[in-house]
Amino acid sequence: DVEPNLVVQSASGLSVSVWTAPSPPVKGVNALRVSFSDGAAAVSATDVTATVWMPAHGHGTSLKPTFDEVGAGAFEAAHVVFFMDGRWEVRGELKETSDGSADSFVAAFDVR
Image 1 (cartoon, rainbow, N blue to C red):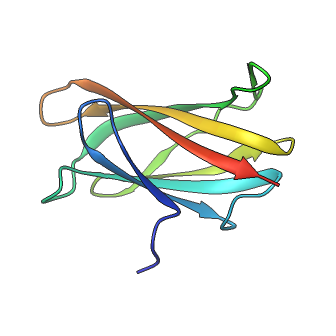
Image 2: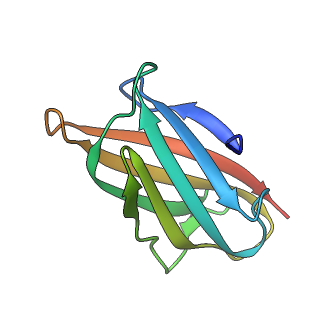
């Protein structure tokens, strides 16, 4: 297994593993994979959405990533666009299948 680019915590404390292709992410089109776990097992979600945001400039991208489920607790988006150099955030939201609750995470990347 390939190690994730980074692991962050969601607002509710889930572990969110994030992979990019290419790795590290580059200016232009990237693929993104995220998976969720509670530390012991994968956590299934019904829906994952994200906004790609550049906090230093206060703007996002016009293309919103579309995530497809690829396994238990794992989702991929093929067209994540970082259109300029700098720090970008992928601000994600998920709905957990266990109880229907919503959760959120932020994954930050320095793009060159």
